[in-house]
Amino acid sequence: MNDRPAELRLAMESLLSQCEVDLRVVIVGNGCEPDYVPSGVRAVSLPENVGIPGGRNVGAEALSGEGSGEFILFFDNDAVLPERDTVARLAAEFDRHPDAGYVQPRIVDPAGGTTLGRWVPRLRSKDAARPGVVTVMAEGIVLVRRADFEAVGGWPGHFFLFHEGVWLSWHLWDLGRIGWYAADVEVHHPATDPARHEPYYRMVARNRVWVAYRLLPAPLVPLYLAAWVVISVWRFRSSGNLGVWFRGLAEGLARGHGERRPMSWRTVWRLTRAGRPPIV
Image (cartoon, rainbow, N blue to C red; front, side, top):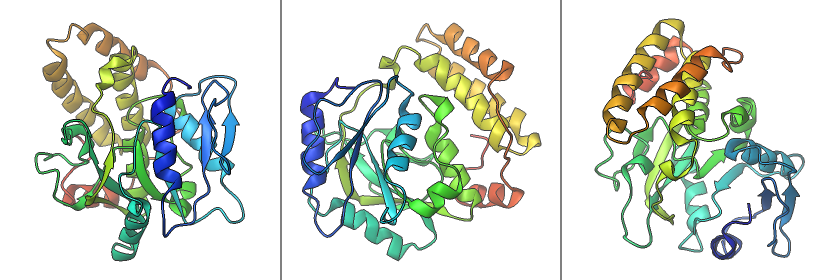
């Protein structure tokens, strides 16, 4: 969106310096024409901002076709790959875990050296250095197997922002894949507050409903929504935004559900065995 010029240059420098991998790179101008496009990089300009997952879909489509590569790296424009072999190490995890549909690196704030709990894609997030199977993702920096990504239809573009990683992860699990958290592979990303986005409280509530209605077997929908009402009231009780959150919940219940593609009960069991039953 041309709002992070210095960060974008650092991100692209770190990406284009990667070794041991063949890269094809695209920058998506979400509602703008990118004002920085390095030599050899393709740019796609969208006339309006279609949201983060919609923009990622556009980038993936721009790199499809012959010679498209085995994997897709989705990479925020304020992230940095600290080592020249970071992408190669992420790709190597697929050899060690051939059932993985996606590999998630450990995200570290370069200023404080910390990993936020929301960046660790499991319920028990205190030990950020522990690798293992995970059932969701921190979608800003993730490597996905292209064939699987295309098989599930990509990101849910209509979400615009928030919870698209839950959607994609659970669809990949429903293919019979897993997610892998490669905690020894670090990438850098500033520790920003997601609530800085004006529609945060409305969209997190609305999109939770859409995840439940479109992905879960019918008996689990009310359980999932009830659990997240309790969790969200506890989390946001002192923020002054609970009214906005409940309006988002009502919006999600009223419209925008789309076509239901509920996961199988086998996937529910696999997610539960992996440590996160799909009701939280």
